[in-house]
Length: 250
Image (cartoon, rainbow, N blue to C red; front, side, top):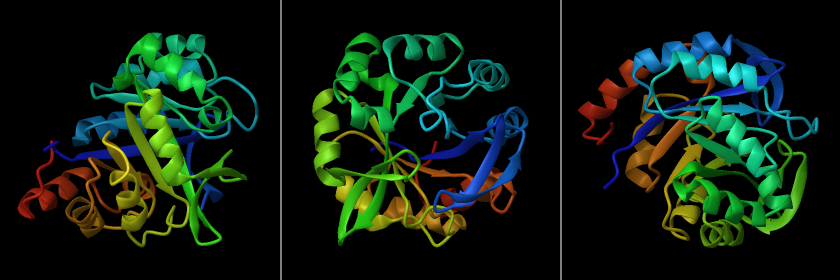
C-alpha cells in the first residue's frame, strides 16, 4: 500500500499565491518562494504550483518563478498552467519541475497526454480534473471552472488512464475553499474507475478531514492550500496527528 502524501498547493496569479472559495473571490496568501521554502522545511511530501490564469490568458507559465521556487525546495515539485506542447514540458523540467500538471489543454487536445507520456514517461504526467455537479452528474469543467465540458468525470478519467496519464489531481469545485471536508464521493468514484494514483483536493478544513480522506477513500494524497497558507493546520502538527491515528504517511 502506498504511503499517504500531504501536499500543499500554490495557486499563482500575477506572481503571488492566492486562494478563494469555489475558484472565486481570490485573496492574497503570500510570496510563493517563501511559502514553498517553509513547506519543504515543515515536512511536506510534495509541492504543487499552479499558474491558475495562464490558460485563460493564453500565455505560458512563469518560468522564472518556477526556477526560483525549485531552487529553494528538495521535495517532488509538480507545476501546471498554460502547458500545451512538448516544448513547454521540456522548459518546465529544465526549470526544476519534477512533474507537470495539465488540465484544460488535456480536454482540448487529449492526444497531447499520449505524446507527453511517450516522451517523458507517465510518472511525469499529472492530469488535473476539476469536477462539478451538473444535472446530478459529476462533469469535468475547465478554464478555472468557467466552462462545462461534455465529459463526465468517470469517462474522462478512464480515457486518461488509457492515454498514459500517471496520476490524477482531482478537485471538487463543490468543496473548493469551503473547509467542509474532502469530497469522498467524487474521490471514490474516480478511485473505483482507474488504477493510477489519485490526489484529492478541495475542502480540507482541519486535520480530521485528512484522516477521513485516507480512511474512507483510496486517495494516495491530500492536497490543501488555505489551511497551510494561513497556518490554520501546520504540516508538522498534521503529520503527528495522522501518525497517532495510525495513518501510514511518508
